[in-house]
Length: 130
Image (cartoon, rainbow, N blue to C red; front, side, top):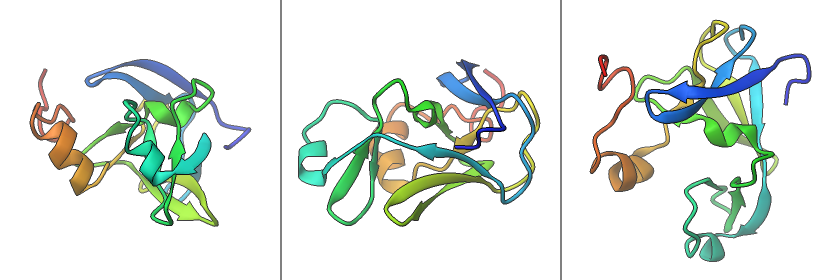
């Protein structure tokens, strides 16, 4: 996590979201997705959706409230991307992010098709006026 940057959790179009308190530059590391590492077969049985699959047979259970990155919402036009580096998940800015702007990532096709598409996407690109 960037110790010199701060975030806030606030109301977003998707419920709660993570917002930048200070601006981020393109390519800057924004936050780390943290939590306990569990076998993916165990994660598949959990009711939580705060899971990040590492594709090595393990998953990060990010449901703990100490994981601020759990509040990052999906967007079809995201301002960040998640990258797996050395078994850890970091979120990087794809473009400049202004103070007060919601931090978003693309959750990927599998998650989108399973959880978002059936209810309808509420991101700014898909539902610009709510």
